[in-house]
Length: 48
Image 1 (cartoon, one colour):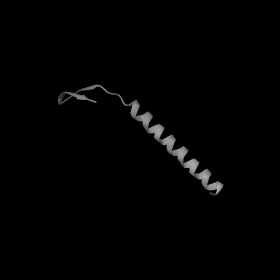
Image 2 (cartoon, rainbow, N blue to C red):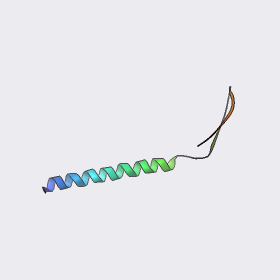
Image 3 (cartoon, rainbow, N blue to C red):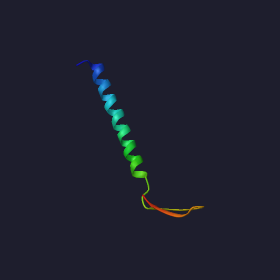
Image 4 (cartoon, helix red, strand yellow):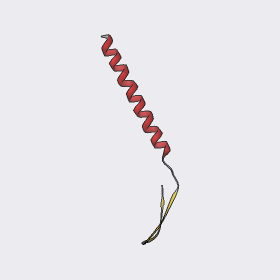
């Protein structure tokens, strides 16, 4: 296998690992619980 191809494959895997880690981090940052909204239509309660 050509050395440049090997470096390219390692780089692609590193970028894929970074993107996957970022997406996992974003998913964990989402808040969960209850959202209470009060507006002209009245009160609405949503669970997250």
